[in-house]
Image (tube, rainbow, N blue to C red):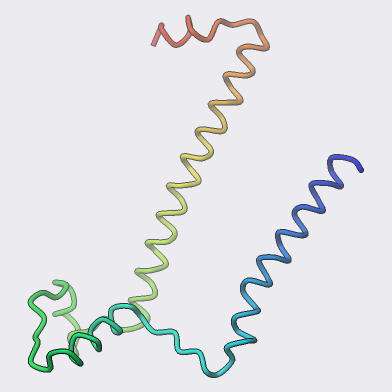
Length: 121
């Protein structure tokens, strides 16, 4: 088996695994699944313990909205923005590290002393 066929097989298996991870919970849980936020679950638990509890802090921009709660669309937007920034930073650093390794390898192959090149900086 050639290297490209091996890579293709690994990619297909990983993609099928990703699909299985996404689909199996939906099929097995069906209509009984209740996906709620951890903030709401914590609030419900606290009020079940002490009904007179009032939160001592709330996010400053929550006061802007009518009910004191961020609308679902804006909450989703903020979550997506956070995920995009985090993944962008992660993959930027990963790309830099990968290119650094490739550049060092190319320098060594061309006979350039890496130790001397780094000390010039």
